[in-house]
Amino acid sequence: LMQIDTPRALYEHPDNIFVAGFIGSPSMNFFDATLVKEEGNLFVDVGDFRLPVPADRMAAYSGYIGQKVVFGIRPENIHSPQFAPPNINAAPLQANIEVVELLGHELHVYLSSGTHDFVAIIDVRAQPSVGSKAALVANMDNMHLFDKNTEQAIR
Image (cartoon, rainbow, N blue to C red; front, side, top):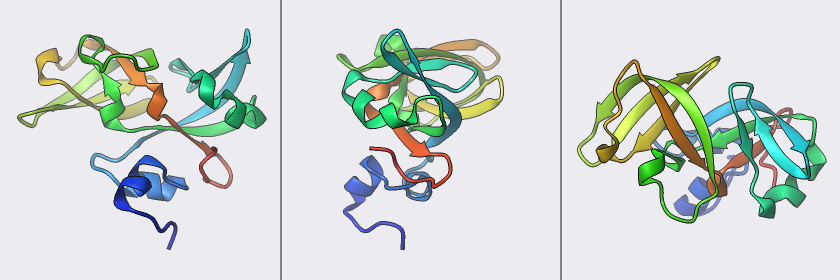
């Protein structure tokens, strides 16, 4: 038994990588990363792209600057920029579109970026095409960071 809580709390605030990956379909995307500080800002550097950490999380993560971490983001928190929710901490990223699955009300887009494969659930109006490069944004308000060694959530 890893964590006891309501289904919503398990989904939104997993205590570790196992719970984060177990709850939700498709499961959370995980990236090996390094937390870096540059000009007073924190970034999650996954090698293929660098994403800014929201200001309200900087204090919680500051003890991990320069360390290897695991960055987690759920597929529904990666958006086509033109259909992203308003007022989010949107971090741009690019990836190659490998597969697109239309599920009626949403698209599951399977992506690759250098050494990383991941999934985005995007608005059907985006009309991505296989083989093209997608410009996307990650909603960093809903990012997760895990200790690389213990696999516990960093909060």
